[in-house]
Image 1 (cartoon, rainbow, N blue to C red):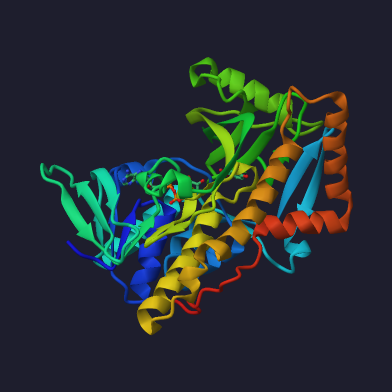
Image 2 (image 1 turned 180 degrees about the vertical axis):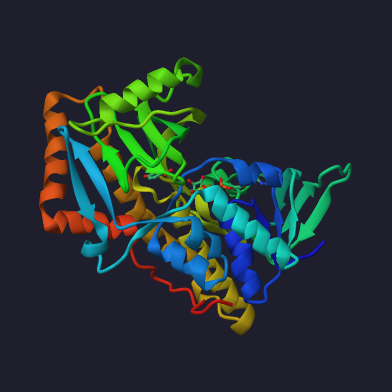
Length: 401
Ligand code: APR
Ligand code: PHB
């Protein structure tokens, strides 16, 4: 088997890359270890930056998002029993964020790729990368129901296989530069069947721990509470979850709406960057190269930003033989990645309760929140980062294709 770009992973990064390459006439094949049903059903975050929304619209995969997504002009920060609105729309000259679940983005991209005749191999096993430092890299894998390994020969491999995939591990350890921070915080996330509780997201700093109120649809809500990452979800009954949410978000005259919880899980939080985003003809993108804590809502958007750079670089390479963007791929992406890391770290540190902190440090946290909600300059900085910093390399998909 042969293709121009072999893509490992059908997450947002892999699917978007395949889509953007197709629009430029470049052939790709995606290898995915899970089933289509699984990738389309896994509950993840759901905040899209303006630039991500613009890209999906400009490339013809934004129709359902524009109908079913929720457009928010601001967020609320809650602390000391009061809520303070950050008007992102006003502070950023008209930008907004869109709440649209990641697995819905995946459904739209899978449908567009398959409709265009793309090859996506689901349920593959034993994916391994070979000769990545040469101009003839190969991916070996066992196809679904197959007994013999297949070999996919490519010009380039895009490692879009998330944090636990094999692509990053294929780079020799002594040549891989990785930096990370593990937080003592976990997020217990729920999907609940209740009407929308608030028109905008609420980020609450509370003595009992952080809480986040989000939404998915007028009937389904997405909320999170900070828990110990070592907690077992079995110890969190629905009643216990609701009582924590009430304690952390209710205010005089405003109370959470309880309802049946239809999904719950706990995730731990880390910041991670693999600065070696290119090795030979292997390029890492998305969670394969970096993880952000979800407090800044940057995960999917950073993946989309890497892909815009990579798709543009591959486009230039195939159409004019230029390899300037590909050569600078890591450098270009890392400038944005580190700024998103800074913002996600800052939001996480400002909003979570650290039991090891002294009263002094807790007061510093509250002062930070007071500052960011009372200073126009500080609020504008939060808003600018939250809606998404401008892209250094602009995509050239200006109209619906
Ligand atoms: N072989 C093939 N596919 C694999 C393998 C493997 N060995 N290991 C992992 N994968 C697949 C996963 O099943 C998943 O579908 O790679 C895909 C990676 O997708 P994501 O983890 O969603 O990563 P990415 O596309 O970079 O998107 C980043 O996802 O994790 C969230 O918060 C993150 O929003 C961000 C976004
Ligand atoms: C979500 O709706 O899942 C969500 C919203 C904001 C975040 C993280 C997750 O910061």
